[in-house]
Length: 544
Image 1 (cartoon, rainbow, N blue to C red):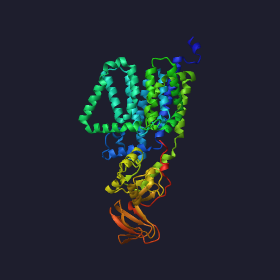
Image 2: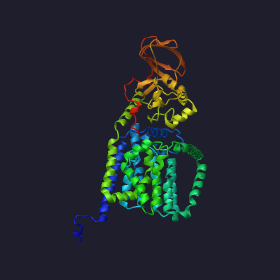
Image 3: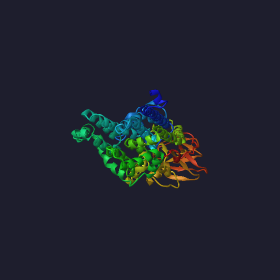
Image 4: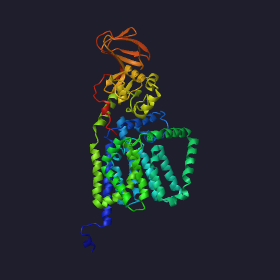
């Protein structure tokens, strides 16, 4: 009878097991595509900045509090391996894969609280293929690291008996996630879902949370008072930056995410319908888990990487809708759709941008085989020390302009800074005859323009150019060092130097004169021969 009953068809339980295995294989394929993307996707300006902090820590420099930057202690050993900056960033991206695996595993584990294992795996697959969650999952940032820790804490709380040891594990994981990024507070609705589900178990331990918080802050104040001070400053300055941008402050990223994760978006809409129509005891906790999907409506920092951070609890909330879709259209069809979405994102990602980034790194290394202090937008040359270790855009630029302190001039006058990488609009404007948009303070822009010349595209080196027959009295040389004379003879304080001469100049004012008809250049002698490059700052990034 068994053979007649089956006749080549699997029993329901066996069919569910098989489709779960297929979904797991698909999930593995998606994660492999993510890992491959880590080696070819363009590096974001934030990633360059974070790697410059890692390199600074490796050099023994003070990089400040570890709040918001867990990648510094985790990966500060990577520069010791050698290799180029881009190769090191690729390596660090690949080292984030364990956190991505932990995160997806936590999503699956949490979802099994609400559904069967096959649907839970599909929840994990839905997240892993959800637009920016796929493309940003292995970025050199704190987001996936923090999300993996806090989602693991939630999964533990959903399944384990809530004894003191369990609560301690959850507390440690959440605290570590909070140190990684204070955005963890946006997971509050997900923790409220846990409270709703397990209130009977939790109510006898509810006093532990405030006690542990006070105890933790007390220990922090005693052992690391600087960290507590830094935490206070970070919290006080974060609220306006988090919620001061109005409604849908990054609406274009939200639109792109909705399109890139179209299946996830449709399922989320379906979940909203399910909430109104279904009669289920799980509606309240699932609604709380889905609530973080609304943060992009008011959270200013809703850039692409934010979706990789905030969508894990939402993927868990989609469990009932995914189960309905799998029943109606087939789990295998749903698995295929999710996987094809990831394949499409993988194929559409531009590869040429990382080639441009590597070319700029090579141009810099050609001019400066050994590290020198430099100025740029984001720390793109991570193994070189930055003279001004902040962004030349965004909040950093706004704060700099509002303070009115010429920090670029101060940095250049404090130490030799022979290199500037004009890798964003603000720095490019300092060398443009027709600046557009964001600019440095006039004093800083003038000092850069008067003391640096083009070496190769956006690579600028210390130097000066004099038109034929021109003369400059009391011309400040802001970068002391050896300069090579190019294009013709030049008179410096009454002494004539022929083409090819190398002259040592101090940080002081000189009388310069070009008595010939052609342009004469004073170029930082160690920079070598200028090179041609048509790469501009617009060719260095492909969005996020």
